[in-house]
Structure formats: C-alpha cells, structure tokens
Length: 164
Image 1 (spheres, rainbow, N blue to C red):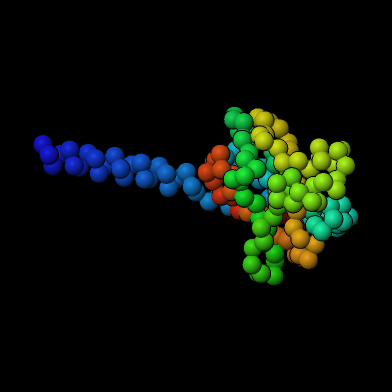
Image 2 (cartoon, one colour):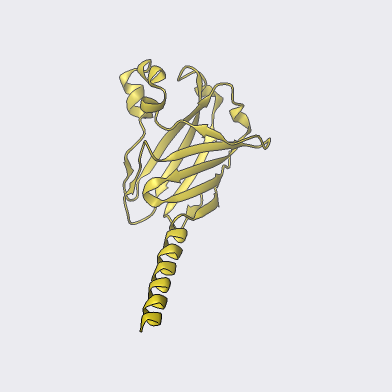
C-alpha cells in the first residue's frame, strides 16, 4: 500500500510539473499571423518619422489583435518587451511603460500624448491595440527584425519576426 501511495504522489508531481512547463512555452511566429495557442496576432514596425517624439528614444509600434475568447490582461511591472536587430547584436530591452521606466521623459509629454502612449492594462476580446515601445535613440532601430514579449498573465514568451 505504501508503495502504491508513493507512485501516486510521484505521478501527481510529474503531471503538475508537466503542466507548468507547458504554460511557460515559447511561441515563435511571423508578424501578423495568428498565434493559435494564445489567440493573438502581433506585428511591429519602426518608422523614423517618430524619432524625437519622446526625447531620447525611438519608437517601435506594435499592433496586437486579440483573437481569443478571453480578455488578455497586461501587467506594466511584470510584462517584458524587447527587440532584436538583424545584425545579430545582443537583444535590447524595450520600455513599454514610460510612466514607470522613464518618468522624466513621461513628464515632458502633453496629456494627449500620455493618453496615446500609456501601456494598456488589458486587451478586450476582438480588440486591436497599438502598444508603443521605446528604445534608446542610440539603437539603430532600422535594423529591428524581431520582437520578444513575455506576458505574465499568459505565462508565455512570444518571439515575433517583424514583417517591416
């Protein structure tokens, strides 16, 4: 009986571990295509016309479409966004929430700009949302070709090859 109990406990632990490993999965996709396991379609682009809009930063525009049947909750403190450049240089952490990460730059924006650039707290079912990312002006954003995202509420990392 003791041996059976031990095997049941081990099996349960393995199932829990397998479930946790499945949740922290990495999904790779080409920009604009539906990422079926999470129900999102994401693409991003860089437009040099926005350089200088936020002093000290270049802007990467990310379009997200929630094609799932769930609200996607975003977390300004725990979500992570980044970009990779085509030249193979190290990944660059992008700022997704200027209010918290660059308060000086945030304070220089007018109220309308703050409304447009604020990091959303959720993406409703069926919604299209633009999320602006900010990288230092020293980054050659024209070489940007991949977006990396970790969304805490989904416990999922996404790697998106941009189509720009």
